[in-house]
Length: 560
Image (cartoon, rainbow, N blue to C red; front, top):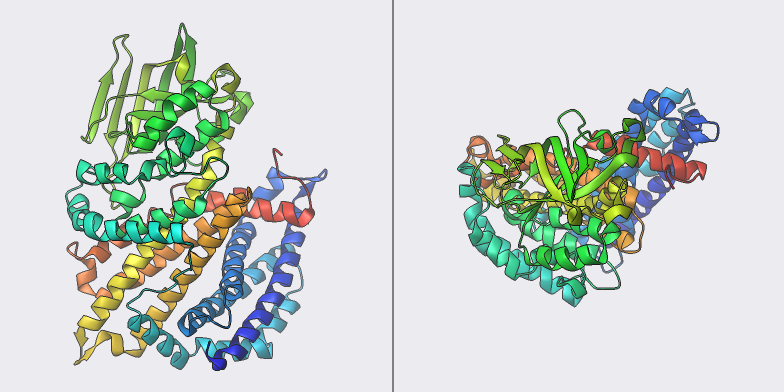
């Protein structure tokens, strides 16, 4: 590593250490404001949503900066070090403002934050890394690397998987992605069948059931590696295909009977049938516990009545994982929910109607969207739709446990979504670099201009930091922990994808706004990432902020 970077790295470590202390103290103060009878009060938490949202974002930015700096070694590439420093400087600027917002709400003295703003090490770091000359130098490094930044050393098995799926994304997915998006097509068999053969749908399924996951542990890192690679080719036509089997697999492993695991897991691993997840309802949004679709017991099974929305890939899917209220007592909340597997024919159309012999019907209509085309999200209507007893996950023992079975897949789903965001960012940054080198403005390549170089530096820094955090959290999840961290990296990576694709489109100028350039697709696809698999507001308030407060207070998580 360049010796000139040693002082900025030392300053960065010192600033982050002070910020961590200030942040932890601020979390504790806010948490104490929310205590009632020794527990966090939902009423008091709702009263501090604004500072809690700032706290969650501060936690995400701080952990990402700490992780980026901690990963550096004397042998690190100088560009990696500069990118980590650029992200850290931008994160500290944001963190100081967020800490001010937290303290203002609780009436605490902001003197310590003010002191850090004026600290010599912070001023020196900002000049050395965040100044125009330094940003330009980093931006030139991003251009020279062709946007291929943030690489992370992998073992042989994961490295081979990454290489194979990156080639597949470039040679098979990317050439079909534009037509799928422009013409609003359903993901074709020309993509699905090769992915079946590569084992994409069995990444979370243990080897004993026909998947590729180890029988004795999880391999979240492989999921992240493959998802990121596929998403670089296309978010909607490839990168998002893994999420639904991941969630259903986790639910079955958490609560399915031995017979259900033996029946469903090998089929899911083979991609026959494809599956979809029917959780969200028109009036509930991210509040899964408020679901009202009814499951009524009848002879031999259950009748489903009600509506679901944003059910992605419901048309092509042959089985729907439906979260239904099987206990009519609404006061039970999430304890009245169960998971039923509703089978249906697979179709490529944007509308469908399934009529059962017994009179039940299921209708679906694809929701027109600005991006994320190919998989299509559907509005669904169930009318006396019959599901046999054999398809109640967990059997009789699974009644009322659907909420918990669903949560079993949420951590993996959020990790995948962070990987999807990284894949889209990687594609956008590489496209921006290529265009900036080719495009001449006022007689010079766009890449030679100072502002372009600064933009590329910040884009590269954000991508590298998000990749590092996602890969690090994957290891935490594989250790049996990381629910909050998975939500945290999802929060940061998805918003970052919006920022990076926005700047990539901006650098393309008018051509970026034209649908004929891939960067326009990256931009509209990225916008969905902060919404699905847990909207950022819900993650920030209900998972990240609450978890941070519980840790600060040393109390058990709600429901533990």
